[in-house]
Amino acid sequence: MTSHRIEPLPGYTPTIGRLVAMLDLARQGLISAVRDLSIDQLDHLHDARSNSIGALLAHAEAVERWHQILTFEDRMPAEGSDPAWLAALDLGEPGRRLLRGRSLASYLEGLAETRARTLRALVARDDGWLERPLPADPGKNAHWAWFHVAEDEIGHGGQIRWLRARL
Amino acid sequence: MTSHRIEPLPGYTPTIGRLVAMLDLARQGLISAVRDLSIDQLDHLHDARSNSIGALLAHAEAVERWHQILTFEDRMPAEGSDPAWLAALDLGEPGRRLLRGRSLASYLEGLAETRARTLRALVARDDGWLERPLPADPGKNAHWAWFHVAEDEIGHGGQIRWLRARL
Image (cartoon, chains in turn orange, green):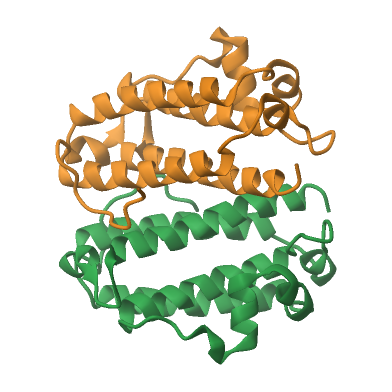
């Protein structure tokens, strides 16, 4: 059931709760956009420059992981460490080559595990933390960073809906 | 200059200010996605079922106007009143027929005027209003409704970026 309210949530400080409600709405939109897709559909490339829907799901998880490191571990992520993660972050040609053959369940499980880590970290933080400058990137605050995670997911969700209508 | 903080803004109650910051980020993303497009580019149809980029800009303004009526005038919008507004809300075939021939400046002016009305209404309201059930649709609150405006704009912005890369 989709909630049609944004409000403080039990277990979180008020502004973090509202943010979690927004992250959840973005995620529900992403999940509804990919419902019941097969591996062939997830791997389909609309044209030579397109990202597959599966790659966009891997991207959503990768972006969330990137922002966990930035905001919870207080460091700039070292992207070089993992070729699959880098491909999921950057998409394009490496994404088309490396991000293939995974089932929808596998993508959704990865997304859910990463999200659970985000929520565990947010439960342990407060609204003062949310709006202070980030130690690893003081021009940003964590509220911006986590809104940006939702924004990226919603934007790619819009692309996924467009691509899915043409499978 | 894009801000990389979400935080309370002068003139608004704290949670409304954070929401306005998010609406502004979504709008900046939309505007950067359409920069310098010509009327021909705005009217281009990628395939027979696509919406033009111009139609998606008209849609963003129409969706914002719809939610102004819902949340500020406390009534369900009567969509039948204006064929161009209905086409912009629903997109598809009527949108392809009716939403053509406008310059980028004209779309952006309409978006800015509608946004200015939103901000004038939000300045006059408070955080209690933001999270109370909507009189015209009590399953929703205004915070959800305005996040949804941003969500719709961000999702179509993702489609616009995809379409623009293929003009």
